Length: 261
Image (tube, rainbow, N blue to C red; front, side, top):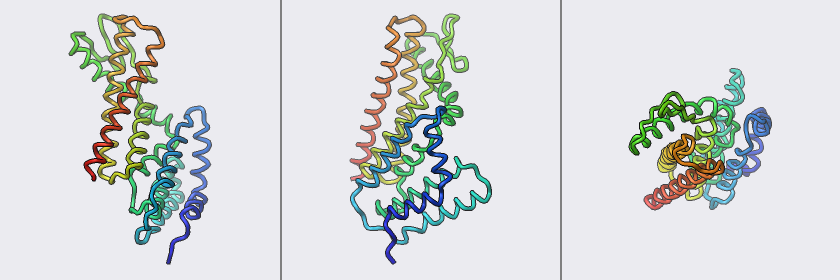
């Protein structure tokens, strides 16, 4: 029996999981988060709509149905809505993959669905400090290579009795989110396999962490008074660092695509 149209099934799935949609709408508009997740929504929609129409896989509703059953069980067990949103992301990915993309599960599309969720404040809370510590360690290593005896102290760099802080905006959480969005969108656009998409996302994380460390290193020279630059240079250094990481992600994704041919 032929499956109902994808749009109808997607609407029914979202209606069945309406608490997640309500949480998504309120969370996206909440001041503690931001609306950047809508870019991931747009990218996911583009991957689904612009993909060449493929024949649906055998039993395309099997995995989405299982996800819906898991969502029902999670609801009965009073699992919080943010956790249930990941199940909906799984279900939407499985549905679109089976009916539109001709595969059982598309990792790039799932990554975009997860990135669309309003977890910005949560990620900043849990990942902000660890990323600042990593940036501090890498930055101290680079500075010592350049002959500057710097030591990391918490999320700060100590040098000649002064401390230069790696503050929360410089943690790289937003840069990491943007880098993963770029890698996921590119992987979905060129239809990388699941394994190559996972490789692209891993390489994107490495590129962003390295770029953020280089940004922290460059800002140390400015904040420590070694190099005197105007205040606008702070933002410019961040932009240049992310552009460099983005070019690296683009190159790595292109390389993975060529090797897949």
